[in-house]
Image (cartoon, rainbow, N blue to C red; front, side):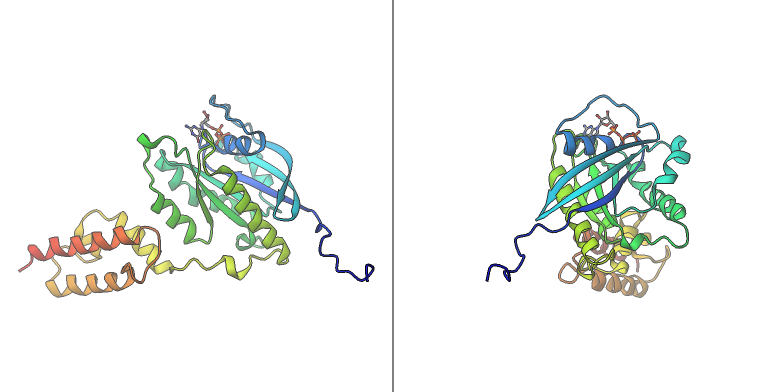
Length: 273
Ligand SMILES: Nc1nc2c(ncn2[C@@H]2O[C@H](COP(=O)(O)OP(=O)(O)OP(=O)(O)O)[C@@H](O)[C@H]2O)c(=O)[nH]1
């Protein structure tokens, strides 16, 4: 009986993974890692020179994982050093500072740099990305709101967390979820499990919300030319209303975008005979 007992309780094989941090200089990459690994915050800025490397052991669910963390310098000057380190990565911590819009706008360029370094055979789809909207303790200077960051991340199938390396808010939760997703990826033969891909909204919805946020006036918001007729305005409105109606669309920011579209239509129709 004993000899045939299932090996349920035997700890599963420990995993070895590689994760990297990415994002503009001074957004708080090193501080996020220090907060999690060393439980402390360093207020003084010490720029990472090229790469900082560390190994840490963590317990996630019933698994022990050995994490090799490569903390990349964000300054463009260090491109030649960090470009060596993109390959064979299971997870990426992509960081921006919620008070620095440029650091959020730069996220696409960071993805492009990684893609270029991985080359034509590199596959970014099978890497777990977590986006950290960092420095949320600095509420006065916030220039990228949660729905904008969440939309950018979730429309790409990335995890999203609001963090503060200073107070520790969101840090443990972010790392636990991040590592957990990497374990799922490894258990699935290095491929992202299908269950982690669905975000509940379409790219068309995400693009429409982004376009509405960035539109310069009501015409632009509805996607019609200035001087469009009532019919053209109504037709454009109906299309967006169906796409973004709060009963149908769960994308972050959809409610605000829907309201903005309703207001834009009202404003335009007032002035069209
Ligand atoms: N208020 C606040 N400051 C933070 C936070 N995280 C980091 N900082 C500060 O921001 C500055 C930059 O932090 P780092 O962690 O060194 O930034 P980095 O992204 O690693 O920068 P590079 O090494 O140049 O790529 C430091 O002065 C930190 O103390 C945060 O959550 N809140």
